[in-house]
Length: 351
Image: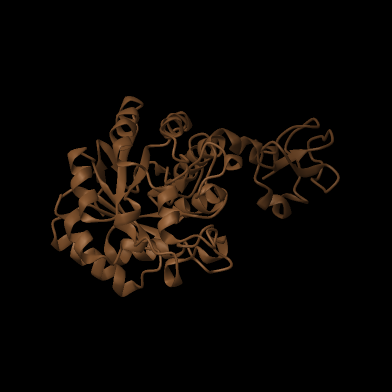
């Protein structure tokens, strides 16, 4: 597959994981909080900060009944109307420019998830380098066509989507002008149990769609994200907050600054550890070969003495004959005198 370039940052199997800090509504309607989230993401070593660009009115209707109210007893936002939830969580559009500018000052890539066509037009005015399609919008064909028509890279979460739906999404995006696609394995529950994450799908998805595949991770902690790198994830997206104790619509499954830094460090280690398929010692291991076991004389012996279990053992270090020759050597006679601690070499033996 081809590497995807997002604002001069290469994304692909030969690059460290691309780490996205998802701000979502964790700013708690404070621009100062939003800017501090950006600063903490930069300190933690993230590559990008992602916003969500919508208003309550572009998402739903201001209706407080029936299907417009979240009734699932297991839902984090049970009892809220959709309109009120989005009103609490949205990022005011007039903040976007300030947030994006601060990202650029700190060397972060700034982009967003648009939720309707007006959001795409607005983000184009801000010259975003790429777009994200949220899981709940991955079947919104008109929106997909609009975003793809910009020609910019698109990161697509695949939460809830069947294989045929992902196929349709990818085909629509490619046919509409987007060449650079990154798919994200995603479980659209909040928080998501690790057991439901099914990250074994990542390499399969990459093979089917000939695409970079990453993880949009709603689990708590960083274990699932690290494991996904071993399966080929090239992008990790995690929700990010200044403090879970301070609350916020997504705070329960968001990382705090120290945790985000751990995520960056540990996913980099996981990626570095993949290496290549190889056998035998690495360059740094070669010196350690001398610490293997080998055959050593354990008691002073004289020429003509037989080697026995009492005067010959397999011990460390590894400067003598390999232990696999032990049975062959037992019973042979010494060619010359030797003191305790002498590594057994073939020229110690009688012909």
